[in-house]
Length: 86
Ligand SMILES: [Zn+2]
Image (cartoon, rainbow, N blue to C red; front, side, top):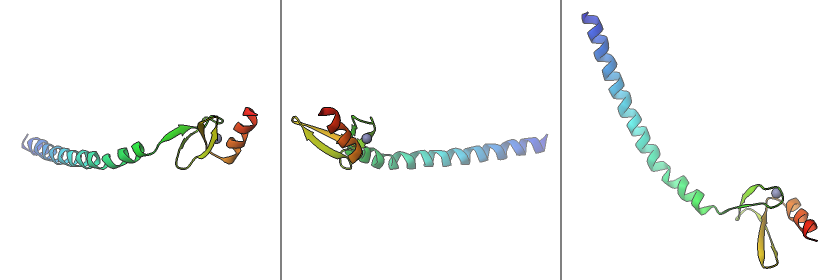
């Protein structure tokens, strides 16, 4: 009976210790998620009208037509779009 009580106490200590570690990890990840959130907010995603891939406007190939700016993932999609419009 005495040994069981000791095991229960040890398990409680281990669970308490692990719980504190989990809380630390959650707090740590909570702080680190602020930065990726800011980065994703800064990335202006737009959809390639040809292949329907989402691309960031910074990296995308842009084409101006009829006062509108279209963004493409590659030159192939840009020329494909030009062919469709023609
Ligand atoms: Zn594309």
